[in-house]
Length: 151
Image (tube, rainbow, N blue to C red; front, side, top):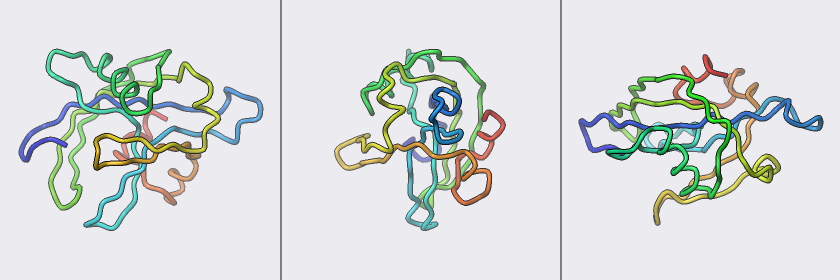
């Protein structure tokens, strides 16, 4: 999380699964689950994280997936830049998102229902596959909403 009043640059990876396997259950994306205690609301976002000084967003994307879920990425393709203004836990946030489409190198990630990963000692997160239709119907919330333009 950025300090108050700072803009955070992040790299996120949009990973889809659908037509990859004949037995796939619909068109899914791999997302991390978040919860806002102030709004008492669960939301979902593509995985990734902060770009460090002197690091490209492409390199940050690969590093974040390696650090968080020990996954290597392939077929990494730049999709675009999104500016996101939001409120989380009662605080204003501002992110510049470098969005990439990518695939997992190891096919085992496509067979998982979900996995738990740690961003730090105190923050555990769940990553899981969710059918895109559940976001489109409004049943679940995908953030930022402009992600729909890239699905």
